[in-house]
Every structure is written in structure tokens, then in C-alpha cells.
Image (cartoon, rainbow, N blue to C red; front, side, top):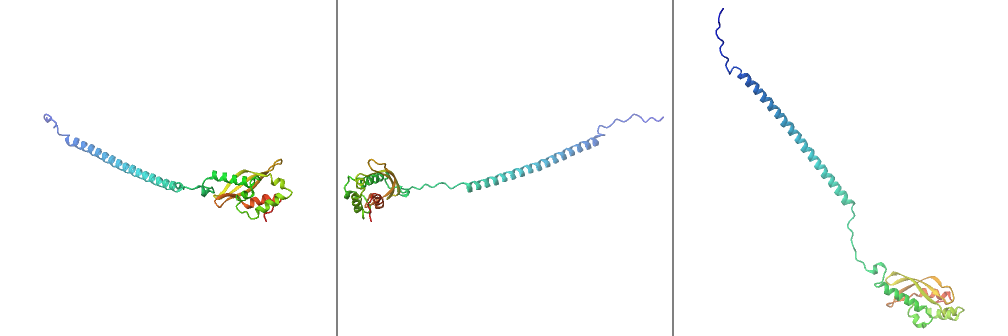
Length: 209
């Protein structure tokens, strides 16, 4: 039998190409995985950034719309206008004017005050003196000689006119309440209007004509 002789020793580099091929394949696969992972990450990052930008844009639009709506719905700031008492139908000094009106009514309807003084507190004396004399000489002369007026309320219609609520007081009788007359500024003073005096004189028999 042929003796082939001893088996030659195996070279340590006999499998090197195969091992190198396997290693290279593994590295290539790993590189591919990394590349795919990077691509996926980039795509996802881009999608997130885009979504975030869209969200920010949407919030800005909502904020802008809310701002426009708020500004349109909000009323303008109030303006403060300084006014004087005259613009509200009041004289410059309402308390003093009220006192003057009460004083004028009290004097005109005071039988103890002389007729000439009383006429000075009437804005128009046309026919008033004659009406006073007529009433005093008539059947109600006793009433005319004792009647007085009590002012209940003064309401200013303007700086120079006032509506006056008053009662006529006759001793021993029920007051004639609910009377309404007027006063106005004439010749720089508050005076009882002629129509007020003449209306009351007519009740007791005196006509101003």
C-alpha cells in the first residue's frame, strides 16, 4: 500500500479569506442598519419639526383671531366730560336758589306784607294788584286776609326756572294741598310767576284780566 507520507501541517491562514468575508458581511449589515436607522430618525425628526411648526402657526392664528375678536368686542374706553350744574337744569347754587324761591312764595302769599312789596316778587304784575283788591272786597275777603303758602318741593327745570309744589294754608280749614306753580329769575331775582298768582286769586274771586 502506498504510503502518502505524513500529512502536511494545516496553514494557519487557510480559513482567513472565509473569516474575512464573514466579518465584512457583518460590518456591511451593521452599516446598513445604522444608515436605515439614521434615515428613519431624520424622517421622524422632520415630521416632528413640521408638526411642531404647524402647531405653532395654528396657535398664532388662534391668538391673532382671539385678539381681533377681543378688540372688536371690547367697548372703547370711557371719556369723562366735565359738566357744570347749569347743564343739568340746575342753578349755580341750588341751595341758595331754593331758599330764594321759598322766600318769594312766602312773601307773595303773606297777607301781612304790603301789596307793593308782594308785587315786587311777581315776575309780571299786569292785573295782579286789581285782582288782589277784587278778591279782598269779595265774599272770600276773610280768606284772602289770612291765607298763606307753605312750599313743599322745588324742582329746577333750568338755571332760571323752577316748578314749585305748595299748599295754601287757611286757618281753621283743611290745607289746599297739591298746588303746583312756577318761579323764575326776573330782573336778577327769583320771583313767583304771574300765572301762579292769578290762578290762586281766581279761586277766591279775583281775576287778573
